[in-house]
Image (cartoon, rainbow, N blue to C red; front, side, top):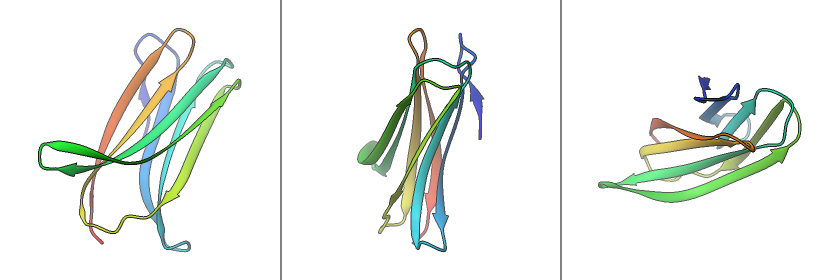
Length: 104
């Protein structure tokens, strides 16, 4: 999954996947563009009524054209989950949400 960050050449990818060989879910994100200092943060939330409860996050900073990060997480309850990826550079900042209906 990719998208453009308005006002920048940065592209972000994000996701939530179940990794059968590990027996766990994995959140991941990627920011790419020109080689410059950039940070990508991936945050997982679970829907609770009209609110979103924070579950976990992972972040990485690098001074390359692509910075990616990920983390194995344990999901024990079915429900609607949101993964947000945030990409930041010295002159751009953007966040994109993705929704997942998880059954466990």
